Structures are given as C-alpha cells and as structure tokens.
Image 1: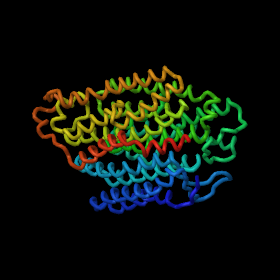
Image 2: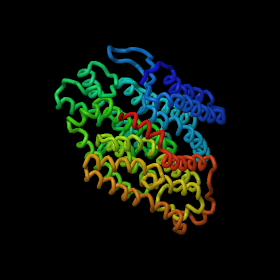
Image 3: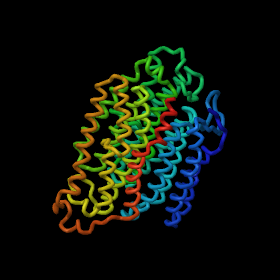
Image 4: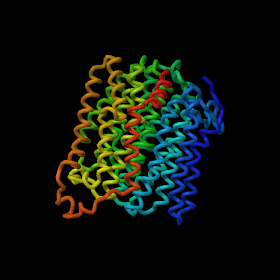
Length: 492
C-alpha cells in the first residue's frame, strides 16, 4: 500500500466548478451552455476513473491545498470509500446533464442558466466531500452542498416551493450548525486533529464512554442528509423542486453525501472496534430499522409519485447505515455497495417520474392507468428500477440485500433479518402496483382529460438517459465486481 501525491483529486472536483462559471457566461447561448455541462461531466468522470486502478490496488492519493490550524488541513485523499461516491456522482452527472436539458426545455422551465450552474456546483461539492481527507474538509463541502442546492429546491419560486425550500435549509443547515459543529469540536478536543484514520480517530482515545457516545449521537443528528427518522422531513418537502433536482437530491449528491458522511464517522472516526465496545452498532441498527419500516409504510400511503419515491429513499438510505453498523464483513459490504446500487436505480425512477410529467403532465399514481402503452420505454425502465429496489435478481439491488441478509445472520440478529424481509415485501407493495396500473389497466378518462392520453409520447432526450441507467442497474447486478472490490478494500 502506497500514498501517492497527485493533483488529480483537485482537478476532478474543479472541473464542475469551472463549468459553472462557463454556464453563467453562456447565459444567452443555450446550446453552448447546455453542451458545457455535458462536456464537463465527461471530463470529470474521466479524471475520477483514471484514479480507480491505483485505488483498487490498495493505494491512496493525497493532495494538500493549504494548512489552517494545527492538525487541521484543507486536504484531499482518494481512498476506496471516496472512490465509490465520486464514481457515482461523476458518472451519473453525464446522464443527468442530458436528461436535464430535455426536461427543462420540454417543460419550458424558467431560470435554466441558474439551474445548470447550481447543478454543476452541487457536483463539485459532492466530489469534494468524497475526496475529503479529514473532518474539516468534509464539513466545508457538506455545507457548500446544502447551500448551493437551496436555489434548486426553490427553483419554481411558487409559495409551495418557498415553503419546501425553507424546511430543507432549516433541517440541513440547522442540524449542521449545532450538532455537527459540536461533534467536530469535541473530536478535535479529544484527538487533537481531524484527520481520518483507517482504524478510527477515536479508537485509542482516553475519553469516557459517555463522552464518546455523545459525540456519536451529535454526528448522527448533524449529518441529517442521511434522513434517519425523525430528521427526514426535509426530504419529502424538497419534492417541490423540478424532477432533475429530485434525482440529484435522492440519487447523486445530497442524500449520498449524508450516508457517505455517516460511513466516514463509523469507519474512520470511531472504527468498528470502538463501535462494538460502546455497543453503538446494534443500537443504531434498531434505530435505522425503524426508519426502514416506517418510511416504507409512509410510501404506501402516497399517491403523489415523487413523494412515494421520496419516502422510498428515506427507507433505502437506512439500508446503507444498517449494513455498516451491524459490523459484520457481509453486512458492511452490503451497506457500502448499496450506495451505488440505490443511486443507479433511484435516479432511473426519478427520471421516469419526470418523463411522465413532461409527456403527460401526470404527477399522481392514480393518474397512471394505461400510460405504459404510450410511454413503454419509460415504464419498462421504471419496472426494472423497481425490481432493483425490491431486490429481485439480476437487478443491482439484489446484491445489496443478499449481503445485508447474510450480515444479519452473521451477527445473529434475526429481528434485523425479519426487518429486511418485511421491508422487501413493502417495497414490492408500493412499487409493483404502479407498473400494473401503467400496463394492465385501461386509461381513466377522468384523469386523462378525455382524449389527452392520445397526445402522450416519449421525449427522446428524456427517455434515452433513463433507459441507459436502467440497463446499467442490471449490468452492475450481473457484474458487481468494481463496487464489491472497493467495498472489500474498505473493510480489509
């Protein structure tokens, strides 16, 4: 294992930051503006992918930008966990950029330049967080992501969007300004630095178990982007945003930053040994199990398609944390890999919701009777992504749930295994009726406005990205080696 000094981490995250300024400069040239986002996405992913062979070989890449306080640097480090998050964010930005152009133009959204610039800076912040070498750098990008996605949430500038965005920023910034800062300050007080450690920064700390438990709870509340109940309400509220933003929030950047940060705390701040000694693992497992079940129950009650997907996200995020805190090899691999598997599947589902809105202006599940005959590509992709969320092979979600189930058995936690099985049935209960309604029910004229259903057709720039992400969710279910290798490198 070797640590390599390289500027590539800085270059990777800077591409989208520079692109944001170019997008603003091309405000009056929409074709050039939109092309900038796509080209930047390809360049960014290429730089991230170029580092993968080194990380898969067990190496790390570092770059220090500047020093601040003693033991606190603004520093980047690329390791296996960061590579998973950065790969997802940079790769899915390619599809999201194409989809967003089709969506924004077909729905004639206003302020498109602001939208694309904010979207670009969001990816900059996500990759910056992925490559953070310490808590200080992670917190900086965590906060940047919260602030730069705020104008995306209130994009429509309606009373409803202002209310949703207000709840969004109060939850995310409020928790980070209080609990998260307290956790970081206490960690610095105990350790004397904020540098992540593969064995856990606090693993050999002389602090009392009570103090360490307080620090842990502050971290869990502070990283509210992970949407553990009861700190989840911001996520359904943010559904007032345009669908590409919802896809960004739920699949690519915001919620993934939340669970990624929680995994950093579990593996690199506390370490698995300390988590076990303090009994924090199994306690957290039961807390997130409650979230998994209750969020699925809420999803069942939602007629609005995006809100149903939002509660699904709340549930699915807790799978990631559940796998990590069970502290068995299989469960940790399952939780880590689910970051990727959920990302590809959930972005597909939100892309499909946006395609339905653009083509038919439908937002409710009850309005979707027969729509699969008019939007066959969209609804087939929705079905494939649903199977992944449920955990049906060969879709990607099956790999995650298999490892999680094996991890629960390894931990001898039969109640957790029951939670996984029950949540899978609930997943099927709120996803499969949508596909059935779309393909097997006759169109309902009371919802379709008479003959309006006849005008519905696929929009190529919207449909192509969602079909591709659905196909990829199958491919990584059949060939999961890349993400599995990185996950096993993390727990090695």
